[in-house]
Every structure is written in structure tokens, then in C-alpha cells.
Length: 235
Ligand SMILES: NC(=O)c1ccc[n+]([C@@H]2O[C@H](COP(=O)([O-])OP(=O)(O)OC[C@H]3O[C@@H](n4cnc5c(N)ncnc54)[C@H](OP(=O)(O)O)[C@@H]3O)[C@@H](O)[C@H]2O)c1
Image (tube, rainbow, N blue to C red):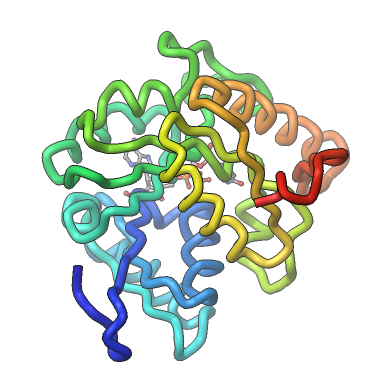
């Protein structure tokens, strides 16, 4: 791990497939919160262009660079995966050798039926139970998988206003889940909630299909809020 100008360790976040709306939105919010961001792409130029756009929007303090996905994976131990379901498994298989032991993979993949020509408001059945569990089956054993950020609007993330939504975080690794909740609350307006084991990711993924349907129906950018939990549950 390299050190920053203050001597404190720099812990970059690599956003794999970060050139799309979800990746660029998260990159922007975390860059504004002071995180060091690497945007990954299958194509170096696309990564650099996306990084330049986020850097410009994030302001002079933002630290954003672009790399090919494998280089981004190798340079970070927090990996945020924001690719469509149809590319998820093959990309993870390809990147597996570049992942370092002890890394965390945060997966936001939603297995929408649009991946096979169906509707974005329906999901596909995934043999493992969810896209996140499919990811966990592919990555090295020493990489912890966390499911989060499925229910956040990318369009709102890549904007300037505080969000009005909760991020439910599911993982079998409590430390990785805690780190992800700490990252989630760096996004203004977001509360993070422990959603239990990774197997609950299937529910988060299904909720997104419902939100997409609501957005079509009501022309909005829906998110979710969980009410009725004690204050300590929100983080
Ligand atoms: N959009 C939202 O509001 C939202 C919200 C929550 C969760 N999500 C989920 O987050 C993921 C990303 O969403 P998005 O809207 O940002 O997706 P996207 O724009 O369709 O794709 C993101 C990036 O993934 C890469 N990619 C595309 N197809 C690929 C393939 N077959 N193999 C490897 N890489 C591929 C592309 O980057 P390069 O071409 O540069 O490699 C693309 O820019 C999806 O699974 C989505 O369901 C989206």
C-alpha cells in the first residue's frame, strides 16, 4: 500500500467496469469524500476518459485515475464491481489471477432479464441464488464478497444533490460488510444497514427490478428507505 502526502496509507478503490453510470456515480461520490479512485475498463482509453470526467466534476481535490480492469484489480484491495450481469462471470474469471488475497469485492450486479433480451423490470434465475453468490463462487477463496448498492439510482449518484435512500449490505464476512457500510455512508443522504448474509443478495437484486418497473411507471428515480429499526441499525 502506498502513502499519501500526509503519510497516511492510501487505500484506493478500484471500480471494475467503472465507465458506466453506476461506476461513475460511485466514483464521483467517493472521490468527493476524499477516497482515491481507480476507474477500470476493458479499454484503457475509455477508463482514462471516464476518470477525467469524474475528476473534472469532483473538483481539484478529487483523486481519480483510469486503468484497464486487470491493472485496477492488482492496484487495489477494495474492488467495486459495476458491470452488466451478462459480463459478470466471464470478467471475474478473467480478473481472478489479478485479485490479491484479502481483497474485498463489492458486487452491485443485478441479473436483469434484459441481459437475454427480456425486460429490465424482471430478473433471471441464477443457479447460485444471486449474482453476488455467483461472484463468490468465481473469485479466489481469500476474497470476500459483499453485495451492496443495487438499489441506488446511478443518475442521482452522478449528480450534486444528497440522496434519499438506504443501502442494505449483505456479506458472510462481517469486517468486509462493515467497511462497505463505512463507504456507503460517505455518500450524502445514504444510511447503511446490515442486511445479513450474502444469500440475502437475491432479495436486494429483486428489489432493483421492482424499482426499475416503478421508474418506468411513474417516471422517477426510486430508492428505498427502511423504517422502524433502532438508530444503531443505521450504519
Ligand atoms: N444504472 C443504475 O442505476 C444501477 C443501479 C444499481 C445497480 N446497477 C447495476 O450495476 C451494474 C452496472 O450498471 P451500469 O448501468 O453502470 O451498466 P452499464 O453501463 O451497462 O455497464 C457498465 C460498464 O461495464 C462494462 N461492460 C459492459 N458489458 C460488459 C461485458 N460484457 N463484459 C465486461 N464489461 C462490460 C462497460 O465498460 P467498458 O466497456 O469500459 O469495459 C460499461 O461501461 C449492472 O449490473 C446494474 O444492474 C445499476
